[in-house]
Length: 480
Image (cartoon, rainbow, N blue to C red; front, side, top):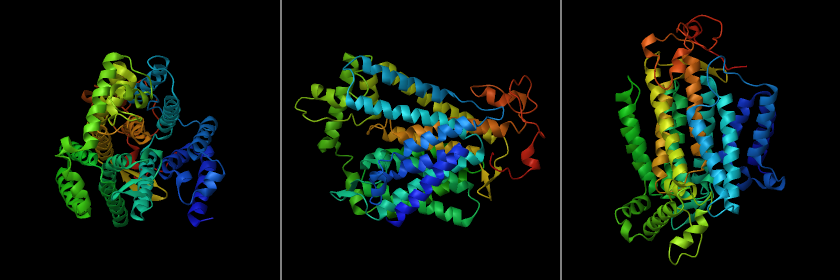
């Protein structure tokens, strides 16, 4: 058995067992397994022979752990925040949509099963990630997975077609180059946020390595919609950097862009030059035909043709098309499969997510910039505003790339949505240990401000202790 397989089994068995005692460990393992997808790796023969579904097994272990030791919000936080509620409604509508339109199909059943699993994990994520150190560990697990993806691509593990990395790296959401590139584009702002919070040279150096590998993999995919995602990430990040860090942030963006350009080879630039000649590009012309077909479907079936049906029904709307095809757009896929109600639910969820993040950043900037914490026995610092900026840019990168590729049910996108809900609860936890002036208690997160000690009319019980334990105890260890 390869040493990589031995290392995986040690990590997997110990992590699954630990998830029963500490469900947060299971969440971290789930995020890591999502990126690795061990059953498809060259070293994963033992996983395939065992017939193991690692993500499902980890989820079962977490559920058992939750039943034994149910984590509590310490008097603050919510299980069902607005973004999660909209996501659950969208999922429910998608499942019900198979009862009309073109009915139930195997792909719809596959997608429905997948999204149910994802929503269950999101509810677990929101329950387990309640404090700064919890959230930071999830981001670290995500970046560890991306480090593995970048290492694979650097070693030419995937399948190369026409000079580009076509597929073969990472999990099922990265089955082809476009999905892999979108996920890595969304990861870049998370790396940037962690870089500005890092305190030691070795941690910043490691983050630079992760960023370089992510950019290198994006270049290898030769995916054109990555340009759109990177542009969206830059436009969203640059004007909304946390106060006191904007000059350094702009400088870092410029330096990062210069370094990224150094990784772009001639093949990348030749591929990007085809964007301006999209009318002569067969792939672009086909996309326009699929979008037109999706819109016509929404007019013929305002309530949708049913989850997963576009791939087959599109042949009726595009003359001469003999093969199944995706809409190659998150929004047109949603419009066709789920109709106008589904499109409204998706838009409402996106609006709720972005509104929550903007509000969280404003609240964070009105208080002490960093929260001290301890992770794995080492001191660290947590900056709510930086995390809000990174998470918003990551989501906008996904949404911008989603114009040209279908990422509606991509698990990575939904994990980011779950992290928004988790960050909201983490913010409530931090602010419950700080004092807020009365004039700030308004808006969609008024419940969050009202949870702060000294606020009048608070209906949430607060943990016993001093008004500002952060000042009294510079380092707060992880929750038991």
